[in-house]
Amino acid sequence: MNVEAGTVVHLHLTVTDDGGQVLEHTGHDGIQILIGAGYVVGGLETALIGLTAGSPFDLTLGPEAAYGPKTTAGPQVVPRRELPRDIATGMPVRLRASDGSSVTLWVHRVEGSRAWIDRDHPHAGKTVRFHGHVAGVRGATADEISHGHVHGPGSDHHH
Ligand SMILES: [Zn+2]
Image (tube, rainbow, N blue to C red):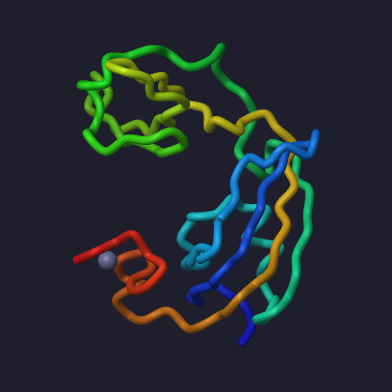
């Protein structure tokens, strides 16, 4: 089966910056991603289309195709209690702005009672290399497609 929109791809993935430093690593179990739902950066998703189980991939993407350009001067410090309880470094948090619109911010650091958050992803502005292999591909279930995320083993979603 080929990777395409509406499939669930099991990936083993390492992300490094242009100096070779590891930014992300999916670990022993890898991750499962619903293709077409916006969970992986656009350039990576495009590169995965058409691959099959066992296919390796190795691509280097500039900021625009990866985590976006840098748009702010850097993260701002806020009291941790103003954020959801289970925040962790590298996580997105959706907050309601004063005008009622919702905005997604990224957690850059958590330390004691303080957290550093920013509109930019922690890896914004970086040229990054994505390398790894496709461990498996399956069709998404109707439920997964309607929810827009993966269910079952390898997913952190329970309901
Ligand atoms: Zn669900």
